[in-house]
Length: 434
Image (cartoon, rainbow, N blue to C red):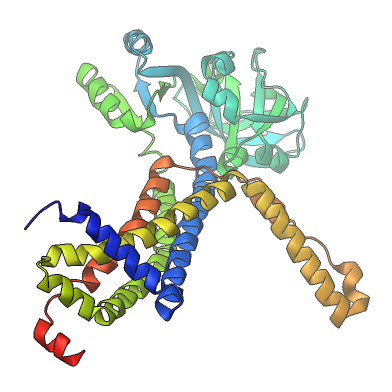
């Protein structure tokens, strides 16, 4: 049996001949519907996964850049600080470490001048953190004031935390209750801070709970709280490798990677994405079954031609490859246009949602004008479409390639299954029947 039988020119010729004969029959309709199904399946899956990636990555980027970092290292004393900083500076020279920032943090019950309360996490950072950490700078969006921690007792609040306290730029807040070491008073009315700015990011929990102060202010109020180094790596997926190398050099220093930080939340996002992927992939299952039935019908209808080829010396594999080539062409005709349409929609998703908003509005307006003219003045555009349009779609090349290849291979699998028993019919009976 020739392993290169798939590439024989006559196989492609016969496959094209079968296709040309059926251009006006029911087989042609089935083939076109199969290709259209693959096209819309690939397009839909690429768009849905890209929008879901953009939606999820808003959360993940904000958590990693502002809160968890890629790796956190917790030191106990100044000697460890010096050793860890030397190690991290060496990592920056090797281009493995992008940045590292020392910080301290504590939980607090915050009050305003009127006694209004809100719980928050107070994190002490270097006053020049925006220069030290470009990722932090890119994710934090100031909506009031500036991210200015140069002055002692200055603070920058998340927007929802500021709203809960009813404060704005220039307001004074107090860290009424504060966690920390034994050197820190649990309750005090003298830990007053001046609000220098209010920020917003892509993750609501950070907006509702985080407040940033400088390290000098943190040292004053937190006492001898442990220092933590937030480390950003060139490749976030190398966090476990970095953790292993770091533990080998500093076995007495505690490390935490971003995968362990908010593990349940990241797990929920992963499950959500996988379930959506499985739901949309049902499109391919339906199309694959349709192609399978179409190919079985084709095998039956072409039994005379198949037996003729067999009597002329064609082997089983070569005859099966005729139908596999046909399925490959169907898969390519569906998957490639589907991929192109999916990428076009993904990169222009904002315009797509705006168009959908307009279409929904005018359809509702015309329907209301016909059925209840008095109420047409109350028809308004659905603002949720504009909320969706602000979610940036993120196209992952690996996912796009997988979806496109899956569309092609689903056709090949269906054709292989349909032609598996292609030569179990008796040649003499087929010729006699004909």
